[in-house]
Length: 361
Image (cartoon, rainbow, N blue to C red):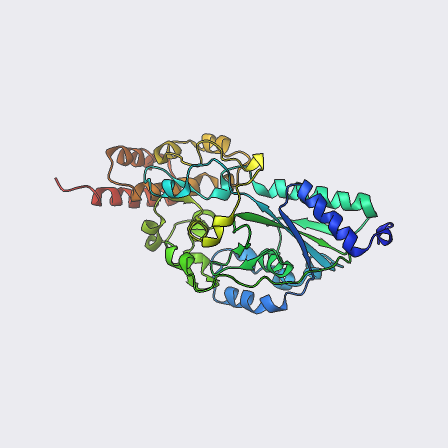
């Protein structure tokens, strides 16, 4: 164990860690133990019902997701942090959703990819701890390993898991990222699960375009637009295409209409500022991008992860859902000769939608 930890009480060390975390841009830090027994059953039930869809990584690690010491040996406690991300001064989300000529991109993806940024900050936090007390065992995670981050955050006291299955903080809403440090440090744990304040509210359930929230606290990812536009490879089921509207990367509806987000505060992180024009992009302009332009314009962005084919596939659906337009039809037809089979399928669907929506006469 470390050489200087005896000089500080666990409470004093934790307070230092919390102070350092704020200096590094985290809005909150809490600590929990590793016991996820109360969450194991619901997670396994979710898998058994195949609600994870094609996200095979959710099950291939076995018990590692809820047995922390299988992932990182000698883990005693888990530090859980949140970082607000809603970009300031971006185009109003509802205005974009209501404009069929524009494409809606989930607000978390408008700036730089959060994975690297948060990992670096967590690594800096660990280095500060190391400087203070000497060597200790740890490993940092940001959505990058078999970690049940929302149950850990809830158990640590960062908020409660809402009916939409996202974490909600009573003072900050839900527009934030989560990260973890698995450690062998004997820190005081809160283990104070925040009381749910969803009450009788069902806005998230009612507004979900594809009815992916099949019951309070139960999400069928196979119906979720975020899953369909980001995780799913291949064709998007026809039954969901019209409901997707102009959502081309992710979906925020369950958060946009959550009453608790009236308490959210825009992020002060420069890297989370919206890249022009991704907060209110013109669909035809995005569809015209070549693969090289797509890679250039999404460099350093989470969007790049889905690749050019899924990008074109998603935009084709949005164009099909737009009002009849000769310009849209021409743009779709021009892509037929140089697209993959999957994209062509979605272009043909979009063309059919365009022709069917043409006004009589």
